[in-house]
Length: 111
Length: 113
Image (tube, rainbow over all chains, first blue to last red):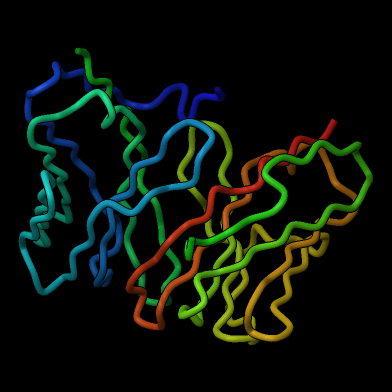
């Protein structure tokens, strides 16, 4: 299938490791952030979101951390599995419900 | 399935032809968005609707592009006189008014030859 993001930053991990993907956002007024997973040839798939009045939010195997002081988001994936291999994007809502996407990160999980 | 549906999944067209894509949002969502994604990049916002009203258009949406959502349900995106630079994945998304549930479809891959 067609690759998404041929020249993206890449994070390579072993199955079972924890993964941390980082993202810097641009607009200090952004109040809502979303992490998406995108597999080759597919649309972005919602993983987890967080509002600006929170610092941390947990889902199933995933945690998002928000540091508004330095405009930084991170996505932590626990016990990474081969099915987690994809390109991950952070997106910020700049106030009009249009999302601005960051540079994606390719996650490669080796068995 | 109650996800966002897009049709067609793939479209190959000759330069200069017109193309039209369709998006069916999640039925409970009143906001609908169009994005474009080129290889190696994140999606870029094109336009969005609240119900049938088109509320914002990006500079990326040249006068060859037009989007409609006539009854506040499905939406169409038309590109007239296609150019090779229009080749991209066109993504539709929908959400509740506050942005909750922002869900993307699988996209329409356009190739202009």
